[in-house]
Image (cartoon, helix red, strand yellow):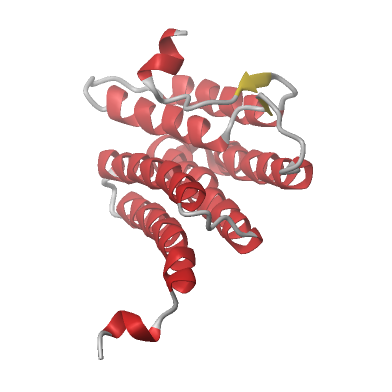
Length: 194
């Protein structure tokens, strides 16, 4: 008897998007582990991998008509780990550790603001009311900016702590701001060139 005969097709359809979300959490977790080992560029790379997986899970769920409330909440928790906690720890250990309490508070900003941004998105999300805009910078984009900064700055032998502090404050503020960002595949070339 084939293995898949034991599982209804519907179950497989529901498992796949959530498995991708779980893989994104794994990437965020590995990013945190690499941060603890001082491998900051690798940590940044795993944040980028988490972003790619995050884009896939929603798309797969829509294509397979497998969007669920559970999947949305699971994805939101994954975003908190991947785009709040992982970048915050990376910036704390790489740039702000020597600043003591101020460094701890500064590195906490992405965690707190990502949480606020995600909670606001979850409360406002209504599938019956389509909207063309995100309110506040998406956590994914904020994390990509921070990860990209680490990868870029690592190529040059100078202390970028002040720039990192500015970037941390700026991305945190933009996440909780009321600035509207047009929805769409922000990472696509067509979207960037519009």
